[in-house]
Image (cartoon, rainbow, N blue to C red):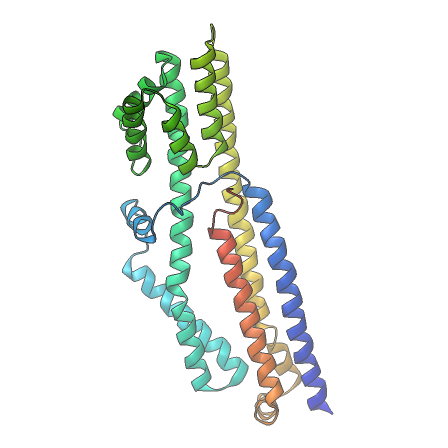
Length: 302
């Protein structure tokens, strides 16, 4: 009778983990989608190799020591949790290897986030400085040349600005240059800024300073929103991970109902219990990875 009760408790824990993670995963998605909006740009124009090289250049890649620490934490953590579940060294080794194999994927997600943040900061620098240059020159290409020569930009944005300048001189018009940049850096502040330049250039304006000042204020407001969003996302992310770790340990409640010996006997005598325990670990891990994906990717950048 006790065995049936414990089996039902484990089953209830499995259902709770699946239901909670499904709901929390949905909330996480909605949170990031509602808070990021149009904040970050796309990185799919660049290969992973380019992204990783830029992150290294920025000095934001982990050192070998940090990677070793991460690998050790994953290996030891997975081994301890799985051993407390199954009291089987072989199963613990398998879970430990699987956990370590996730390190490259998590590094990949982190690189994408850092690169998206870098690109956004470069776009903010680009739009702000082009507006200031345009206010002086009243000529878009001259403004681009001023920003390019000032050295405030870094590649790849700097190289793309140079390409815009070359295209403008080659075609005798800025239309293709703007179309190229708008497509590659799909930010509404880029499109709105370029549209303002075209309007002033084509229609003329006796006093464009007010329009340019308003655009600068819009950019400042966006940048402020971005940094607030980063703080909110980081806070929410920590809570998400903390609850994930707690859910891993929920099955330990069963062992408070039984002695360790009785729990091990139950594992050895009931294959369905092992399946449920594996299910709890797999489902919780899946939603943790899903949360990491949403946290690190530029959700809502379309």
